[in-house]
Image (cartoon, rainbow, N blue to C red; front, side, top):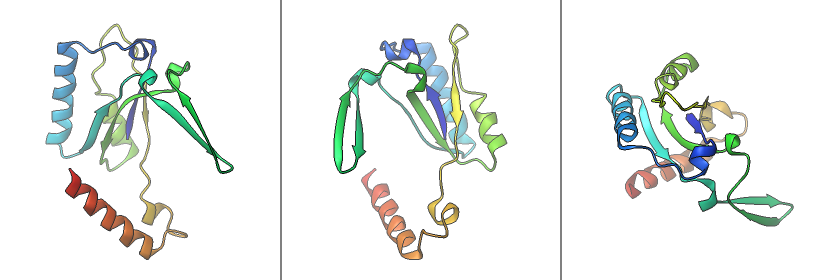
Length: 139
């Protein structure tokens, strides 16, 4: 997963220009053509969101906006890469306006049955497979 971090501009509701949208669309198409793109979405600024904290059976809701903009997510791509190096290579191609500092984070998505084999049973895997089929039908 390639995560693009928020900044003061995105948190202030800055809308990308038509050229920036077009450049991002070209990049997304390049990844789709290469067969690596699984999902890609941008997120609205945090004042349109909330945080939900679950602790000790209690739920606490905090409405946005959130002050630490560099810790927030502005968007993401989920890609299928064969290595961290390949994912970093794709991340290094993310379009970035010349006057904007773009901060990305590259993270591996857990494969539950493989990464948590000690506790993730075959029964749980079958349930997840069924859920994924249902999710695909919903699209």
